[in-house]
Structures are given as C-alpha cells and as structure tokens.
Amino acid sequence: MNTLWILSLLLFTVLAGFAFHYYSEKVVNNLVSILNLLTMIGDQLNKVNTILIEKANLEKGKDG
Image (cartoon, rainbow, N blue to C red):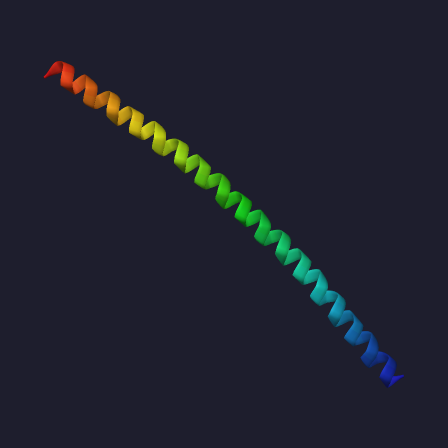
C-alpha cells in the first residue's frame, strides 16, 4: 500500500510538472505576443509624431 501511494504521488508530481510547463509556455507566448503588439503600436505612434513635427516645422517656416 505504501509503495502504491508513493508511485501515485510520483505520477501526480510528474503530470503536474508537465501541466505547469505547458501552461507557463502558453503564458510566456501570450506575453510575447502582447509585447510585440505594443511595440507595433509604439512604432506607429512614433511615425505619427514624426509627421506632426515635420508638419509643424514646415508651417513655422512659412510663417517666419
């Protein structure tokens, strides 16, 4: 009975380890996807900001 209990506990530990590894891999992949999305949004905002600065400089040049 004692050996059976130890073997079942060992099996449970191994299965829990696999489940945790799979779950943590999914979480890491999702975080990487979110970070990539935020990076793309940041790049687009940077382009818009650059265009607005160039437009403001051109208008300033016309006024001056």
